[in-house]
Image (cartoon, rainbow, N blue to C red; front, side, top):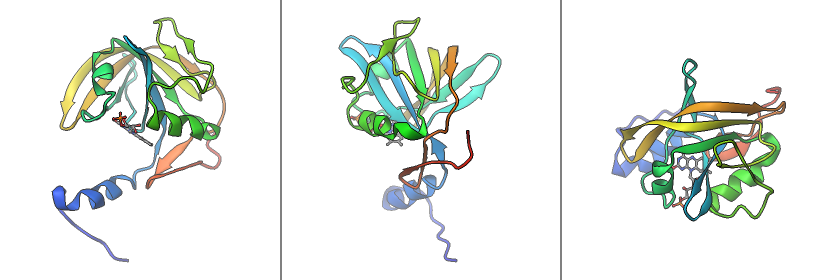
Length: 166
Ligand SMILES: Cc1cc2nc3c(=O)[nH]c(=O)nc-3n(C[C@H](O)[C@H](O)[C@H](O)COP(=O)(O)O)c2cc1C
């Protein structure tokens, strides 16, 4: 087995990203309402933080064209993507403002939400902390919706399933 050890920096950016990609995650789509309409982004930086109070986090890249809208958002919704919803994850990684591909709805906070996801966390922005070239956004979960099913996973740059994880 061949191991490589290096210091993360400009010359090793690809290798560093590949190393991070070894950590498998679920896949979420975050949505919010903007002045120009509904906006979404596919995200795997989602994490649970606190149970009491119920806090979650995710990290938008400051270089993203969608960054400012999410940094300004008072409310947002996190959708955990089901195994059979890969198309949705791919779509919103490419087009943040094209909601024409599905029948979307609004939650109690007036935020655009995607029907049929594995779980949904309706959030109010609780705090924002600097995190280098990303921002760490903490959300307080106001309401949760959940259904049975398997989650879509992401690892080493690929989408996949997780056997038995109903
Ligand atoms: C599986 C996956 C996970 C992603 N996770 C994040 C994330 O945590 N934060 C982020 O800012 N962008 C993330 N992205 C990138 C965005 O979905 C989107 O592709 C990017 O914002 C596009 O650039 P733009 O916003 O400038 O159009 C992820 C993309 C994929 C496919």
